[in-house]
Image (cartoon, rainbow, N blue to C red):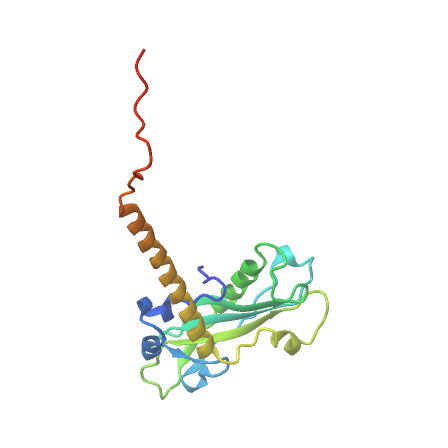
Length: 204
């Protein structure tokens, strides 16, 4: 299962680089807890919580993640992305290599099993991008809400807009470097008039 890199915008919202304004014509961006105007939990479905990754159980960190995800018209979920992360041992810094990726994978595995259905009065549900704050409780009991606060996203649309602009800026920088590199290679490198002409050494 693919997970977008931390603070990356899923392809669903990039719309081939058309920008956020065009994306919002096709995808609703909704804060956590705000999908109820169009969506209900599918009949028989549960909002499964992620399991604590076994390889980090001995560390005992309390961890929270803000995981972005899309709800497709059929009610299934996709486009999982890690938007924010925090751990009780090192805060926002990754304590060891692979830590965030492992927890994000656990979060995505849980989110991929969430299922929704349109409300009865909604004939054509619009694909929705939203966020879930997930917590992983380690060895030290702590109030779940106090952990969750470290990863709460107050304004998802603003975060998407910010990250979209940053990502497009990075793309433009790469394209500019590529153009400059191509121009440099295409420019003949002439020797200076002061540079002596080197002849081949005489043959014995």
